[in-house]
Image (cartoon, rainbow, N blue to C red; front, side, top):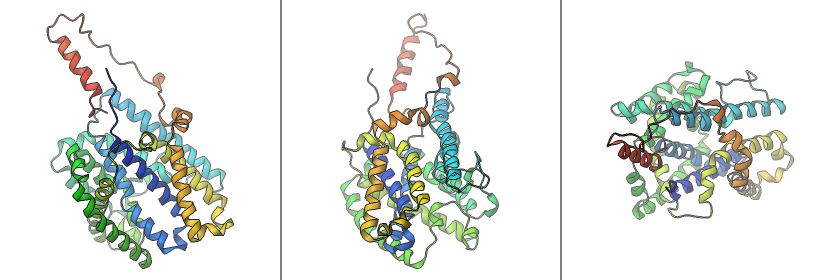
Amino acid sequence: MRPTQRDAFFDNAKYLAIVLVAMGHSWDLLKSDSRTIEGLYLFVYAFHMPAFIVISGYFSRNFDLRPDRVKRLITGVAVPYLVFQTVYSLFDLTAGEAPNPPFSLIDPLYLTWFLLALFIWRLTTPLWRVVRHPLALALVIAALASTSPGMGGALDLQRVLQFMPFFVLGLRMKPEHFHVMRRRAIRILSVPVVLGALALAYWAAGAGMDAGWLYHHRSAQQIGEPWWVGPVATAALFGVSVLLTVCFLAWVPQRRMWFTALGAGTLYGYLLHGLLIKGAGYAGWFDTYGWLRSAPGEVAVTVAAAAVVTALCTAPVRRVFRCVVEPGMGWAFRKPDAQPDARTDVRPDARANARADARAVVSPGTL
């Protein structure tokens, strides 16, 4: 029985998205000194996490509460969240930037919010499969969240709920939707769209746009706008993010590339690169080495961020950190109940059922 072959397109998309995430985090240390960097920052933040979340939703569409899938959710999402929430808390404490409260499992730090959100979103997957108009419902929930300043920071629910429509969109997508995105006509049309978005982002940077709209972690009132702006901004930003995500995916290579294998290690790059970004900020490199804030320095920082996150996705790094990012944890779970052996079962359909179960295990749509 051959193992399921990975789709090069999605591995390429995940790798390119994580490179954009790392570059965006590095630009966060530079954008106050450069309108160009701030414009690029706003442009990338408009779609890089939505693209990641749409892909995550697409690969979660078969999730249910079957024991093996719950186990994978715990070991692949919940445990890494607990580990890196602790690591980032200790890192901040060591750097003299202790969070308030000093440590909390329900107030995610920095980039750990995505793991907590993914855990919650996947648990809700069965709900989205049974309700009518799931995407519309998710957008209504996101709009209501954007008008609720009293929601508080526990579980980062503002961000969980405001980003949720992208996850639900991914759940509703089918392989043919991605095939349509990769048509030549879509790639050609994406060029003027991206150029227009870049121009708009550059203008917004000069106009002083609050990037908090793109973080989706505050209500409209907390950003300083009346409550009704929240639902309007939710709908508008969802449309912009989806459009730019389509443009991004349209240009993702479909064939195997030199970086395709790195797509399987993007979670490692995501969780580890933040320590280096925060470390550079705490060490004051951008103040000590003033040239980093010049145009050549900005290019060097951007290239370095891409190179570092690429290295963190490689097989040697994955082998070292697999124990905390993808732990087996067989000791923590009960063994599955024994299944009847088709070879000894006298029922005529037993062997056919066993073969069907085996095919389901390796089906490309099975997580």
